[in-house]
Length: 189
Image (tube, rainbow, N blue to C red):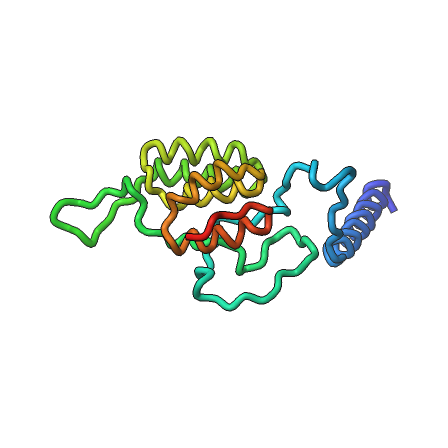
């Protein structure tokens, strides 16, 4: 055997060993994160909050089962918000063709950035982007939901209350349920 064949055989064994290791690691159940100090002083992480980008049914239309207590990294389906909101202000309709709508790609890209910031747990950045969008489109439900949810996760009751009042009733019900998990409550309507 030549040195080249020996190196190829050793490389093949190494790749096989790494493949087995990766398969074993991926098949292991996730481990819940442990806080190093008091949990009230810990800054919320991605695992602590629900996702804003995936659709779900409205809270009023669904019978809820108790939520699991172990954090698995991905929120249960019932905790994901509905993104089938009314058309976004700023969407243009061609004259004479009321059924044909053009999306505003720039606005969509900015709103997507707000969602991405929220999903990675950068709630301050998500709020800043959402506020910029709301400066131009004040009734944008998607951005209002990001603001309310971020404010609740960060424990900013006053800001959450302010933005909560701007949401439509169905979205208020869902945000009320979500925010209660973070200790933020809203007065009865």
